[in-house]
Image (cartoon, rainbow, N blue to C red):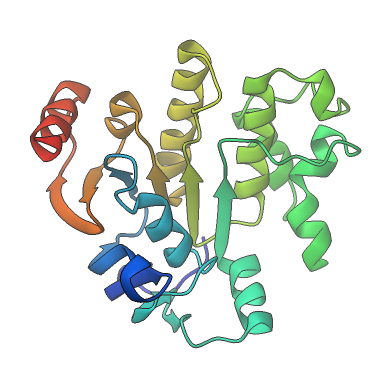
Length: 246
């Protein structure tokens, strides 16, 4: 994977995000500092409105903090211009969303290789075939998204996110649109990409079963990280969520 050395892949320091001004201002994040470790799956949880999606967007360079700094793969991104930021995201960041965001006119293979097409890169010999095999799509490559099930579309989206070997992959509610059986298969696939490829991943989720796949779980409330757990089961995660809500 991309990135330098053994240090953390993403470092956020005292990140705040305020929307609006004056009395109507909303503080979505209030001084969040966090380091995302290499080759680990970090889950981000919290009640609705806790700031977890805002945090993900800022860590991924999709939004800028009101104050504080974020570095990705050793580059401070909060001061970059749009062009530099686009190049950095293309090189270092992958995304998997709740809604699969596939291009309907392209078949599965074309959707998967789209990031390489855009950046004008040729994939390493066998890499695309390996990913396609690992996500279980070898026999569906000529199908367009409308001919694929939800689970298959999400597998295409995951393969697309992995194909350029991003330094860090952000997954936003990756099972939110899937039934529980398919969702479990997708979660296992995401965890396998961490274990087998050394992929670094940050997953925002409201699903305790999803978070239980992670090496580490961060809990947000009112725009701050209020708790952190190591590997644990869904039951423990639900307990902590209830404690936070109370």
